[in-house]
Length: 159
Image (cartoon, rainbow, N blue to C red; front, top):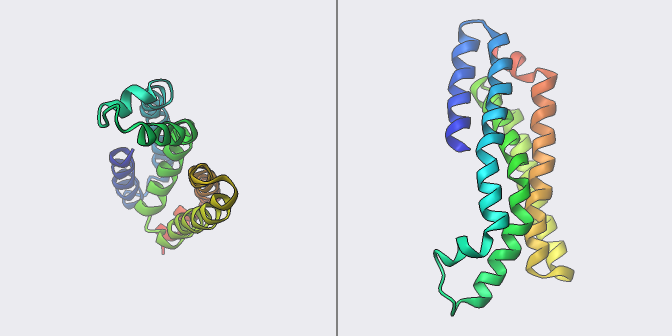
């Protein structure tokens, strides 16, 4: 995902510099499609073959680690599609130089994950920590897409 986002960020900067914002919109859509396409095999591997994937790195003596890893993957893997879109929105914001907007979405995600992990872990244990991740990702994706759709990336780039 990071490589796709990095490419879209450069693409955004180049097309803003060439005064072709319509290409940025096409790039965002294409980046989202590519990101979702890349997320699919990871989701399948981590969600349906979670134990097999973990046993590549852990032996059977690590049963607690495998159990914990499986819980984590079952909760987080479906949200790889969300993070793919979030990273594409972030890429456009960064490429346009709209760093304040990018940081607002990123820090909202981080802050929410920390607070929720703390709160949810009290009643749910480690599962509460894992649940905090996708909730933060969803919020950050919504914020990034709202910023993208509002066109803040256009305003920042022309200043």
